[in-house]
Image (cartoon, rainbow, N blue to C red; front, top):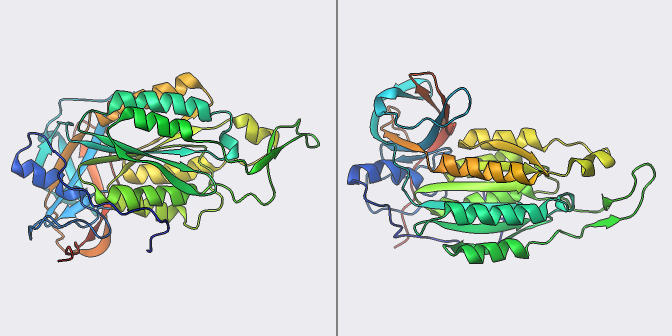
Length: 354
């Protein structure tokens, strides 16, 4: 698929991975290679097939996941023996396992600035900035993308939370709407008839393909939106596939002034498509509406999950790198819920240009 946006393509290297053994690096970092034109590690056994939900490395597939009890509380201190992994229904042997979540985190924050977000945008800026200050360490980096009728990178990768907050503060509501009363509606913001809409799916693809696919280590994307897309050149399946191939865990915080939709009898259907995106990548959808406390609680939950990840690696019994999609399932022997990616694409790496 060709690049849709004129963003610079980043090839980033030299990210610290902490005091992991070489075996753990092979198990965890290898799966994080880029999905399209992935960077080469120079080792013939480090295949980087884009794991639609993970990545394939020569003969190692690695993934990050959370485990929760029936009440949704995170469960720590489990061991390799507590889990079983299946690829396309076939049991796999776990080669590497760690409950350490100290790998560097690369985080993309996508913020919807379409007209329907007018009454929640300031809340998103404030709470989103506080979350970044809370979650980012000196090993981590983040960027900010603003989207409405188009998508824009307003802050490239940085460790500086002040620059990230400044980027959030720069985001303004798209003025592709007008105000004024309409019969039976009681006034308020009304999308214009020729409004191009909100390019949500394009923004997800941009974040995954142009930004996160080049990274290694833990990767996550947080999207602040009402979930409605109108005007994207791509479809939800394209956004899902790009996020999977980038090995990015996607969280969607549904921030919406429901009164905006109700006043104009607009359908609110974004949640279903957002669940497709998050369930495929190991994240989840959290409804916050227009409530400050709910948004803050949602960010706290995401922070806890990102700090409580297990990761494991296995050598797949199917060694073909044919670009096919492989379904994955992690089962906990105690029947706890495992929140993980749904699969990966077994794609061979392309060599770096000489």
